[in-house]
Image 1: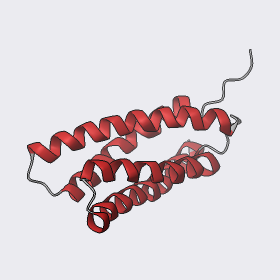
Image 2: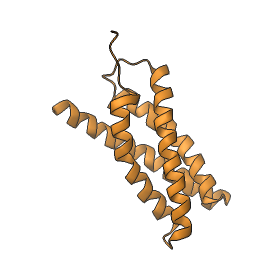
Image 3: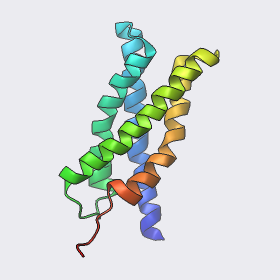
Length: 131
């Protein structure tokens, strides 16, 4: 139980760093480069992916013996699927609500964090012992 708690603490810390990176890059793209929010969201996700993978591989799931070359492919699939949900929800909410783009993005990033932990723990960073 203690190991799971420690893993959750690292997951939250890395996730917060990655989400903050995603949000800051996306908002920076909109504010400084006049990018459309959906395009800025993609750029933010790509930058945050690197932060997220390195942090989770070295901290959150460091006990896993899975080679990084396998983990990065799996985690990319998890992250990309999460991004598709993120981008779809974001696009819909940008048109369906009057909530500011930056607030919507923050809410969506928080909402996907739990799903990402579960799938990462059960699959992306899981090492299956040889049979």
